[in-house]
View 1: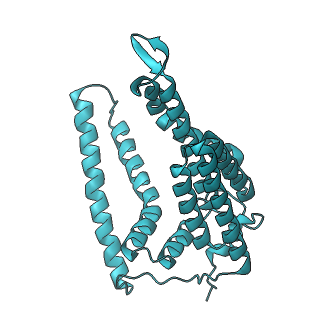
View 2: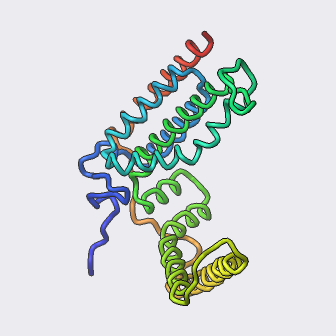
View 3: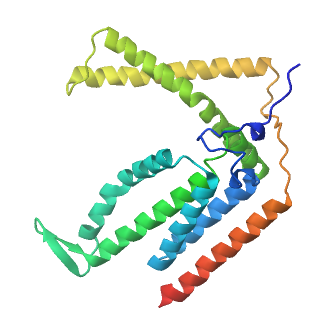
Length: 264
């Protein structure tokens, strides 16, 4: 019989971070999830640029400790920034205030610009912290930690099954697209292309339903009763307490800075 290998014994995470060399990777996953959530709440509540700059610095410090690959991480952050870039570009033209310049008859305000910078700093700080604290976990470890934090089992199971089978659905989608190409399909801006993509989405839904029924039947045959037994037993260690206390002090420091400089 082969021994059960815990996810904590793997040298690398799914994101490519080195778990053995990362001090942050050895912190209890529950503490990291709570820390990420608390950090996001505090950062969203802040408005001072000085505090937000400090929050971004803390996020970069966590990122350096997590030992995530720098290039891949920055590409993911850039993808997030490109998603909100259009919204940020419109804020100076939609928020009333003192005008900076006028573009095609639409004035851009300083207030809108500062609001766009504030949102960008908040978004980047929160995303970087989440990537450092949460994305370095294996999906199964994340599910186990959420279960330990009393998150409803249905949501935990949904998360774990989504992570497990999203690649399967992607492979199914690629097979269907390859079959369409083999039959001479070339996408364009016409009703035939729209109808073909509609059929593709419908076939994906049908095959997903059929696969889910087969998976459920296979799980029931193996004794599935609605609960997934957890192999890892998470234990709170002194290092986790030190991390939690230090992170809490840092959050209190950000809150005090916000009360001091935000009011000023």
